[in-house]
Every structure is written in structure tokens, then in C-alpha cells.
Length: 209
Image 1 (cartoon, one colour):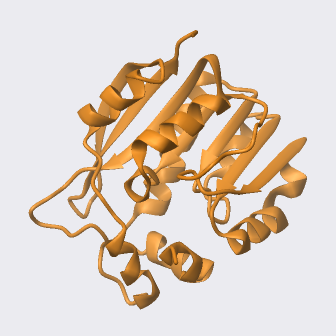
Image 2: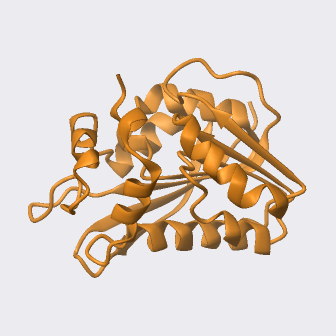
């Protein structure tokens, strides 16, 4: 069974918000940046959990937000928090590494620290179905480090099993695979946290067929 089914949302959110981790704020900041730059009317958030960063999209006048996660309990909490914040909020319990149903495409797809838990080729094929020509895909990818493990240590032991399915995704390899699905790199930058962990933020555009 995928260990994401076993991680309580409270543990995940508390882990990500720990000062020693600091990734919840970083991911929300990067989501807000992507929304402010591309000014989308519709957005899909991959691995949305309980809706981290959704409030940033609501304040930017996003009209349709699609949240995708493998854990239904996360989506239930996201619905409780944010249903009233968007004209259209679609929460889909889906495995991005499996078969995806047909959905109306969006202007922006955001995936923060989600590709590390997926078969990138399958996931990008599914994402292409969510992307109309000219839409953007923003991926936040954790960089490997000799000083840090895949998951920052905290007291939340329920997250330990996630390390068994975590794989670093090289940004160059990610762009190469994405090109097979007609995504073209627009820009790339590195974000570093106070802890010393670094992340590649890769922005791509979906080209016409």
C-alpha cells in the first residue's frame, strides 16, 4: 500500500511547518508566485493535501481550482477549508501514476514536491491531458544533498515510510521527459531554505500538438 494513505494530515502539515523543515511556507510562496506571474483563471494543484497555498490562489481571483491527491481524507479537509473560497473547487482523489479520467484543462498546473513520489513519465503524460496549449506547468523538485536526507527528521514518525518511495528528480531529466509531451522549458531557478536544503523550480509551457 502507498504510504501516503497512512500519513495523518495533521502529522504531514505539522512536519512541513516545523521551523527546521520550513517547506510548507516555501511551497505556498512558490504557488503564489506562479499564480501571480501567469495570472490563470483555472489552476490544478498536484498532491494538494489539505490545501496548502489555496488561500493565495483565492486572493488572486482564480475562478476554478482543481486539487488532486491520492488521500481522500486530505481532500475532505481541503473541502471543509476552501469550498466557499472559489467559484469552482474540484477535488479529485486520483493517483497521478495511474489512469486519469478526462477533465477540462487548466491554465496552470502546479506540482510542489510531488514528482519525487511518482513515475515522472506517466505523471507528465497525465498532466498533458490537463494542459491546454499555452498553459504552464511549474514543478518544485528537491535537490540531492550530501548533508541532508530525503525527508527532514522531525518527531512525526508516521512520515518515515515515505522515504521508501521517494526518488530525487533531476531537473534536466525532468525537462527532457517533459519535452516528449510537448512541454518546453521557460525558466528555472533554485530556492534555498534556511536549513540548507535546495529546490529547483522549473517552469514549462505546453506547446500545441
